[in-house]
Amino acid sequence: MLQNLVNANLPLILFPLLPLIAVLLSLVFKYSFNRDITVIAIISNSILQLITGLILIVLFYDFEGFYTVFLSEWQHSIQLSFDSNRVYFLGAYLMPVLLTIFHHHKLPSYNIRMLFLFFSSGCSGLIVSGDIFNFYVFYEVMIMSAYILIAVNKSFFASIKYMIFGAASSAIFLAGIILLYASGSYFSYASIYNNIVDFHPTNIQFILLFFSVAFLIKAAFFPVSGWVATCHSATNSLISSFLASFTIFSGIMGLFYFVIIPAELLDYVNMLRFIKVLSILTILISPIVLFFEPNLKRCIAGSTIFTIGFVGFFLASGYHKLALTYVTVHATYKSFMFLVYDDLKIKNYQVTGKSISIALFITTIFFTAGLFPALPYFLKYNYPFNDQLLKFLVYFPMFIVLGSFFKFHYMVRKMEIPIGYYILFPLILMTYYLLFPFSWSHSGTFLLIDAALLLLTYYFGKYIFNKLIYFECLDTKYIYVNINHELLYIVILFIANIVFMRIVS
Amino acid sequence: MILLIVLVAIYGLIVSDNLIKKLMCLNIIESSIILTFLTSGYTKDGHAPIITENVITYVDPIPQALMLTAIVIGVCFNSLAIAVIVKVYQKNQTLNVTELSER
Image (cartoon, rainbow over all chains, first blue to last red):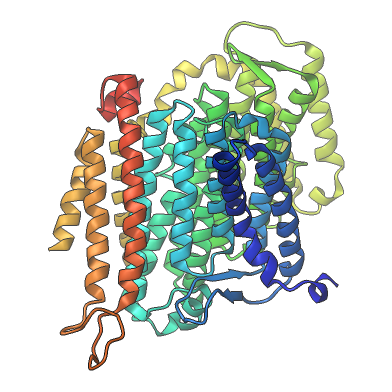
């Protein structure tokens, strides 16, 4: 119905322009009439972006192929494009945009609000970018605003750390773009896919190598994920929710469009296997990082890496819709998690606050860990694991994630928790695990293992967390000692990629 | 030659403890990449890509246009990075990444 009424060109062009119009109007009012209208501009921009975004979602949800708008008649002109897969990234962006309407007061000054609008224009442009170079430009607009938004919060070292990793990955991405141009002069998504088969095999291997390493850094796969917790937790909760919900997943967007789809088209199985291996390592290592993290906000920021691992794994396995749905679901609960964080108080690992905030926070922890009955649990269950060991390796870390958040309640110091709490919590969970018919139809054995692990985590968690000091050798802070080590991992990633491609083939 | 410069810059980026030196190494890597792209658009005896009478051969304008954008992005990044590094120094009295990581 809507497809017949609305031409897709208008919302597609309007979507990235809205924040820029808001910036221009704010500047005109500030310097011509000496009036600060940035709050109104942010609210209006958020509402209008939600409307245009929802129109795009309805128009493109089941659209096949790429819809492209050329802004001039020149073949290399700026292009905007959209397809059904980008609906999910748009959804991931719209969730924190919705929350901005109610939490705009967390952007305290005129300058920060202007920066936020620039940040929004970068994010919006990235979603509708029609070619690879515009993707690079909009990514830089977005990330540069993010650097300053972190720095204005007095977190200068976090900002510079983010800058170094951002610049290193962008340089590698740019090198890939050069090779792509040298191979066939194609920049738009559609023409890359249509012509990639004709590229020289050596060139395409190097293009995929550069793009994969660049986006593995941007999306923070293991071992280059040490910067995420520091950088994403260093700004205010609203910006953190944008960084964790969308910015980091724009790396996944790049990985999907410029590595995974070309690798599938060319049947480069080794590249997909390499991403799968890294994803599994990310799923396994990231919970251990969280387990030893004493800061709740860093814990929330770091838990994004756990989801990145799952999304990467599903994408490389060919389950695109499953992975992209996970991206949107993650954006929803992570945005809430960061904003609820502001209502909580943490003292000596004990989390206190309003009952509604605690309840909402526990719900989001369930989503983060991917536990039943949270939606990520069903997303994982839709993936048919052929290997039981792999299934266990993928499912087990979610209990470590749960434990890493529980430690804030259990207290490492001596404090008793009411016995009623011990009984009520597992009772509710056991009811869910045992009675929900959907889960039984998949794997009864694994449900019982899940339930048993959950109960063990809950009952013996307090004792485990008291002994944290004995497990300190497992702390991944020894992996991420300083920036130099983390930069070295980029080189290792390069070498591992090349070796993997050669040896496995 | 460009590859050699990039390798030296990567080495400097990894082993140097000073933030300014790291920034310089990043600049060298970025400039090398830009130079590579510009040379890829070079045509022997080619003229500037402005349509002129009696000129048949032009250099490829696409790399120039794209790299101009990349250079602008690089300048913005540098100015921003230097400003933040100054703030890092004012706050911590050091630019050593190992010391900064421990704080």
